[in-house]
Image (cartoon, rainbow, N blue to C red; front, side):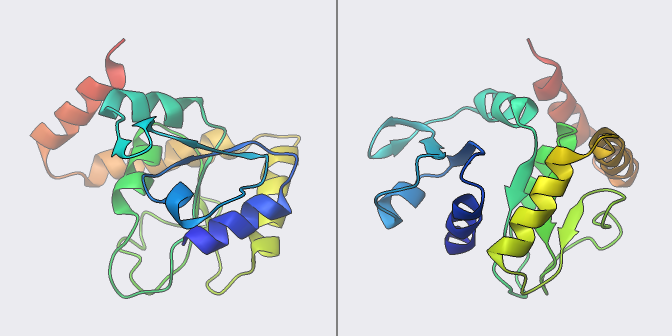
Length: 167
């Protein structure tokens, strides 16, 4: 939900937000100064390798993934990339959330209630950033453990591991 993402960024003016998107900058003009769009070699072609995306996710403090309420599973690959990189994930509950065992608030991710406002998202993100005892690593590791345990495709998991472990 690009509108929600923009609203969240506006609520967090002191936090740098990187958006990986080939359409975001085409939709929105005059972005706030805390937003940077990455992934372009030029304005018309989206060019990031899987390894580049992995590094961006690994270096991120967290991944913010607001999804429009739909029955269709959405955001799956981004969420799983964050989990595979053990990066804390903020995602909202929506009707098409595909794995309710994997996505449990404050256990494997930060699950924002459906129909929450950008202020609610921003408040949760600020709490996460201000935590004295950083639970985020435990939460991200819990998600990773469940993901690995549930993953039925050995070759798929091996391919992900190879990508994650490349230098």
